[in-house]
Length: 338
Image (cartoon, rainbow, N blue to C red; front, top):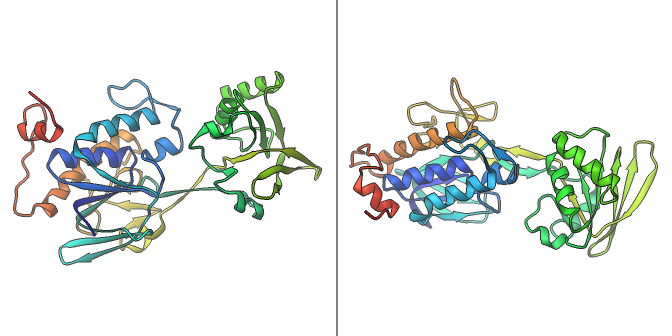
C-alpha cells in the first residue's frame, strides 16, 4: 500500500506543475498515468510541434516543456506509476483508497484529477489480423525511431503525425504513405514536403487507399491496400504504422460519483474542488464558467488545487501563503542554497 498526501491522476503539464506546487507547500504526492511516458497530450499529440502561449517562453515544443517541468519537480523525488489506469476510488474513514488496473493501491488524503480530456487510446485498424502484429511490427505510436532504420515502412494516415513521421523516417528508410483521401488534414507545409519527397523518389504516396489485409507469419512481410475503385495493391513492408488520432475515454471516472457535464468535471473556482470533498480536478477535464483550455489556465488551477489539498493532509495546521523568493522553508524544499 502506497501512502502519501496526494495522488495526482495525469502526468501532463498541469499535473506536473500541481506536483511542484504541492512540494512547495510541503506536501508529498505520487502520480499515476495510463500512458507509458510522462507529458500527457504534449508528448502524445505534439512532442515536436511549437507551443506559443507559455508565459515568458516565446516558443517551445511539448517535449521541451515536459522536460523543463520534470527538472522543476526534481527536488521533490516524486514517484511515477506509468502504464496504469485508476480503476477504483472509495472513501475509507478520512482517506481515499485508490486502486489501479495493475493492482497498485494507494491511501491518500486527497486526489487531483489532471487527466486532460481522459485517457488516450489510439484509433486502430479495423482489419482483424492487424492485432497479432501490434507492438512487434505494427505500431500506433513511435518510441524508438531507430528500429526503422534501413527498413521498409508503410504509414497509414493523413494528419500531422502521419506526415511528420513519413518525412522524418524517409531520411533513413523506404517509406510508403497511404491515405484514404486525396486531401490531407495535416499542416500544408508538411503536405508540400511529402509531395516534394514523392517527386524526388524518396517516398511513395498512395491516396484513396485503405488497408485491406496484413500478410506475414510472426512479423509483417507485406500489406494489401484497396483503392476506392476496388482495385488492390500489395506492398512489401517490414513495419506498419497507423496514425488515425486518439479516442479520449473518461473510463472508470464515470462511476466515481463526480458531477459530470459533457465529459468534463464541474468544479468551484476557489480551489477547483469537485462535488466530492477531497477530490479536485484541473486542466482540460474540469469545467466552470469562463473556462479556457490553455496550459496557462491549468497551471493556475493546479496551484490553487494544491493549496486546497493542504487542509485534508494537514487538518491541524494553517497554511500561510509564502513567496518562494523570501520563504526559507520553500527554498529548502526546492534545494536552493543561499
